[in-house]
Picture 1 (cartoon, rainbow, N blue to C red):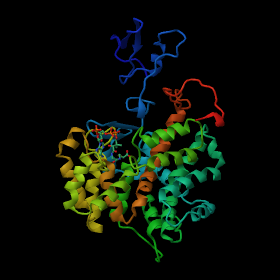
Picture 2 (tube, protein in one colour):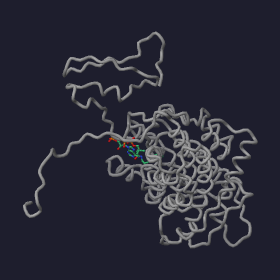
Picture 3 (spheres, rainbow, N blue to C red):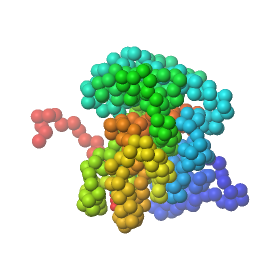
Picture 4 (cartoon, rainbow, N blue to C red):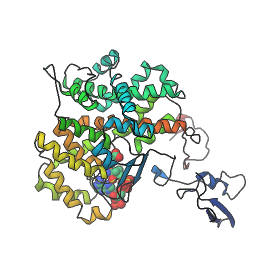
Length: 436
Ligand code: CMC
């Protein structure tokens, strides 16, 4: 962070009214002050010094990044400067993955090489099959994939060499390549079906769909419309700057653990219903509402604060999530092939009401990425418990790019926030027979 605006005084004057002391804090590019500059503010020289208190990091930047830019007020999302709308319309998921990881769009040769690398690392060690076989038939797919990603670290001990760029790249390729295989195997286990192994002549998404859905035929070729729709969904989910799971990836990675372990932790953070589990929660909510006529009662309970309208609201977007607009469009193409998802009418009606009701308008609650994605996933034939996994596959790219950026950032150290201790002061131990 350098100083900005030559000639002007980029400082913030702070007066501590307890002591009458004045401090001048530097204002850095991006309109930020360094939290460590507050430390000099103290009443007594022996004091620790002032800190900022920011539960849930709502106003704290923890890193500089060049990967993803969001303007939440304007509904803008760009990867490496490229608008998400252009990438969704003109690019492919693996091309976007390369862009996110390397910073620039690939040349034809670079893309071919990258696709080849990913394609030839899709197989997983057969002992992972045994691991998956140990889960109950009704185990949640996300739990299975989180566990198997963590287990992969034991198959690749060289992944610990995180300061070696070649080793890092090997693990990045492995993770992007193997995630669809792990996801498909978890689905097949759930259905009690034999695993279908990757086929190298298929695209990333066609291979995934083949491993999931091929039953009783030698060849399974998904509809190109559905293959493309899944590819677009993957592009839209590839990165989203410092969200809960990405922060988890960076925090775990900051202790220098291997990327498989860190990524399983990031996936665990994604699993919750307020983050990547929201698409599953949306579908369950729509199914529970069941009929358009039940919407008014449902909305009243949301406004009374008894429940949330899942798929609405966002910490950063205070406008329509640009990903939601693209997904809504893509849904029409998908439904032309699969037939309309009957829950669509309920979703559209919920959106219309929410965009016109003061409760939602005054809180800037608009549809987010998860509101319509589940309807497409369901139309493609995925059970709801696969939805968060479908988020995790493309987000693997973002997690790894952010992890790599963190490792190369000289300012980053092991993540370790402060706390405000509010518990008891020192007191003497009381033996158990003397406690009341
Ligand atoms: N339904 C009803 N009320 C809501 C909702 C909602 N979905 N979201 C926020 N609010 C209300 C909330 O009750 C609060 O009202 P009040 O000021 O009266 O207390 C106000 O809006 C601000 O909410 P918040 O919880 O302080 O906002 P946040 O920034 O901490 O939470 C959020 C963001 C995404 C967790 C939240 O909007 C939410 O729970 N949404 C539903 C879950 C969801 O769709 N999550 C997916 C997020 S996008 C994909 C991803 O990044 O994973």
